[in-house]
Structure formats: C-alpha cells, structure tokens
Image (cartoon, rainbow, N blue to C red; front, side):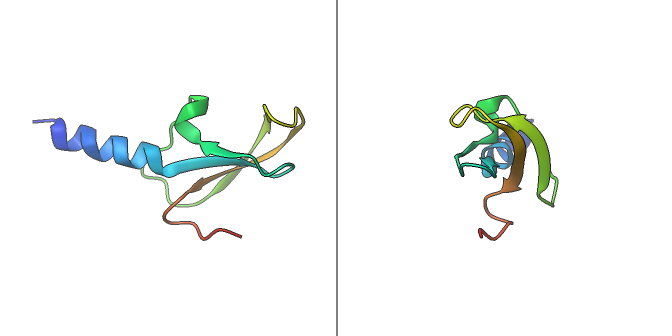
Length: 69
C-alpha cells in the first residue's frame, strides 16, 4: 500500500544536493543527513564544509528543478 509513496519519497530525497559556495564541493543532501521533501526552491544555509573547513553559505538545491550556474 505504501510502497509507491515510499518510492516517491526516496526519489525526491535523492534529487536534492548541497554545494559549498566557497570551494564548490557538491554532494547529495541525504549524505549529510538532510531531508527536504516536495520543496520547490533552492535555499542557502550556513554550514561548515568538510572539504575546505570554512564556515559559509551552502546552497541546497534540487538537481532536476534548479538550473546549474
């Protein structure tokens, strides 16, 4: 009964990505423990990048819905 809903949630969860605006490191949001379901717009969050070690803006965006710069 809930298998289609679970599959839709998994697809949506995997489509969100997070990118460090300082160094450009890009990775899945789910890998950081983040979850953003059925949202439509990108958002900036403050976070520490594990690659460059700086505290700065992180862009959370949908890989399909958001055009890349």
